[in-house]
Image (cartoon, rainbow over all chains, first blue to last red; front, side, top):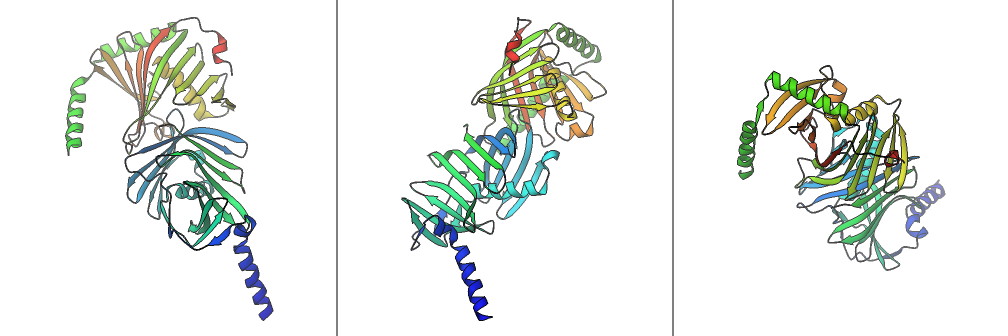
Amino acid sequence: MRYLLISISFILLFSCGSYTKKYNLESVDIKNSVIQNPYFSSLDKDYVYKANIEVYDNTFGGLFIVKKISKVEHRIVFTTEMGNKLFDFSYKESDFKVNSILEALDRKILINILEKDFRVLITENLNTIEEYATNNNSVYKTILNKKPHYYYKKEYLNKIINAKGGKEKIIFTFSEISDNIAKKIEIKHNNIKLKINLKSIN
Amino acid sequence: MRNLFFIFFLSVFAIQAQTKMDPVNAKALQSKVKALSKTSQTITSDFIQYKHLDFLNNDIKTSGKLSFKAPDLVKWEYVDPFSYAIVFKEEKLYINDNGNKSKIDIGSNKMFKQLNGLIIASVKGDMFDDNAFNITYYVDGKNSLVHFNPKEEKMAKYIKSFHITFNAKGDVVEVKMIEPSDDYTKIVFSNKVLNKTLPNEVFAH
């Protein structure tokens, strides 16, 4: 019995740490206890992106619009190029509200995925629970949406990985960064065929 | 507070600028628009689209070109700040998203069919269907403004009202689609040319 417990704990320990092992992340002392994601943090700015969504074998486009309404509130709206609203979400601290959604998209499973993906985009401050180093990147482990997320930062935050076991489940990539704006953002899901590409247009 | 005053003055101004049109003139406008619509074999126009969302500081401005060829070929093309074209042709929707081409068959989709019909109708302004809309007519300076409020519940869920502004010739100069939340999309046409020869290649995918 005792051996069983020990081996189970060992397996748990091993599987929890396997992402960092698999990707050769070297554990270091925590230097930054808070990680910041500045890309949707300005109250003064309207964030407007041309979006391209590939889901299974369908591709569709639209405008992805984010506005920080108050210190604790974001509004996220997706419209077609012609302006029709496809969905309209509100985030206020840990609350989430669907203001409207097109009937065809009104599926709990889809809303769940989008809610979590976009929460990663707009969450500004997170507590570091572990810190690693690799290829000139500092990697900060934190918990978001109740799941471990790894924040990769060189000069800027350039990648967020939602990892499960040794696998990268969702990869958020930020590029062409200037003035706290990521001109290009990609959200790629590895366990389902879903990819969201965002390109800043304002 | 200052905003409140501004809104107040704006609405007072709006009320003054728009007075209800008498039924005789409304009927005359209808005939003028229908006649022009019938003789418009082709239309080309530039447009600027303003997407207004209440929570944004500024409207999202996009611009492009519209081409129409009777009876039902429409190309709606954004040029700035991104390249995106949508062609309505033979119950199909052809999309060219900056080089990525796709096609949607709208033959079986009632909503898309309606949308297609509406786009063609609103380009020409000929939406005077009392079965589909509650229609009210206003005089707006030299122009006429017509509100089309969808009667069908399914449509009304997405669009509360179409406001179409016609110039003295009965030509559409502005279309505003207002959502139930009062957010809206406003399209302003300029450099409109009627009945210029338009080869089918314009609508090629």
